[in-house]
Length: 141
Image 1 (cartoon, rainbow, N blue to C red):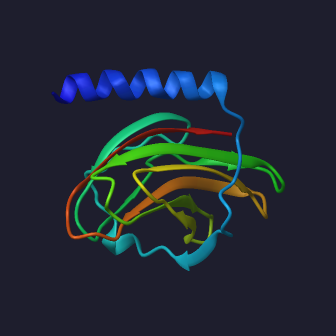
Image 2: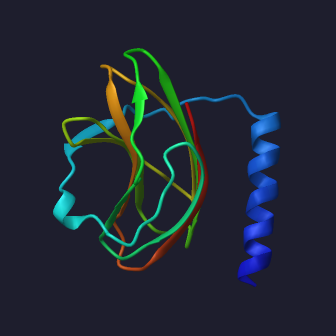
Image 3: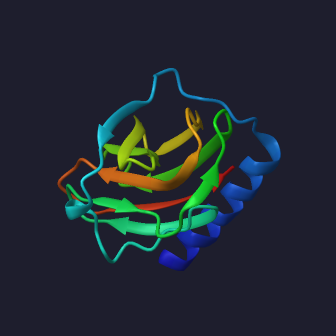
């Protein structure tokens, strides 16, 4: 069942790349300090390209690779997660450790962030629910 889910998600990601324009959600990103003490050490995420990770209840996952960006550049995050009833935040962790995020709804997120200042950024995911969340998606910059 898991293999089928992964294949379906790969097809969805490819179709979305070819057929959808990048666009931000209606809400403004929110910035909060990103506490590294609460970040799961087992989370393995790639800052550029696709990712597939499970995030434990009330935990955070942060990409293990920095990617350099200049002020004004944009980063698109597209992801799906299950269960879709979970509350999950997606965003970027800036060089000062601040998490700029949007809250995803209904099992998916497709948002674009404009980077306010130059520096090295990482993908960040926060699970606000009491159950493990499986996340698949990609980051483009």
